[in-house]
Image (cartoon, rainbow, N blue to C red; front, side, top):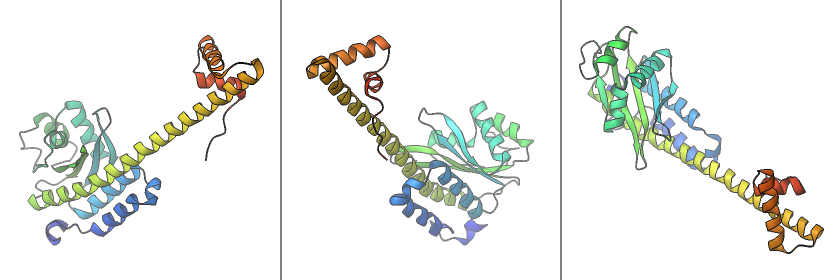
Length: 245
């Protein structure tokens, strides 16, 4: 296996991961999305651990739910879906315990009996999974499936843990950027609403000879009467504010 060829703590594709991490920490971060990062993780994990018949990433969403965000094939999605539906399995246990889990043979493992029985007919026989953890918490887990029993050993488990640590940073960075982008858009909308209200007040002050406070009260009254927000009422008076690029 490839894990036997790599030095302890070193991944054969560390260079690729380092390059992506560097890109995401700089200006090119804006071009990366969580989805593209996950596709990279799946591709590199499958290349690194050659016994893999399928690789997937489960993410913990903002509400604490689980979703298979990237998968190399239907075997992964089917096995993952069964874990979510049954409420048990190695990936869910890895997330709950924040520690790696390995099944050498689903036909003999007794920890997650229902899930093992459900996937045995699909050809899946062995699994190794590791959580993706940073100081912000557990973002998800990488799991690797194989169709042969005993496909993964302790060295694969350690390698996947090292890989998951690196992948967790990439996912955390991508998510942080997306959150920042959403905040930036909300901030732009707030400024635009403020500008609309300012223009509408000025319009009412000039048209109706009102003071600033009276103009604002008039705008609020029109908003309540129309069942809209003050910014929407302002837009009805003066038209849309110009958007920044």
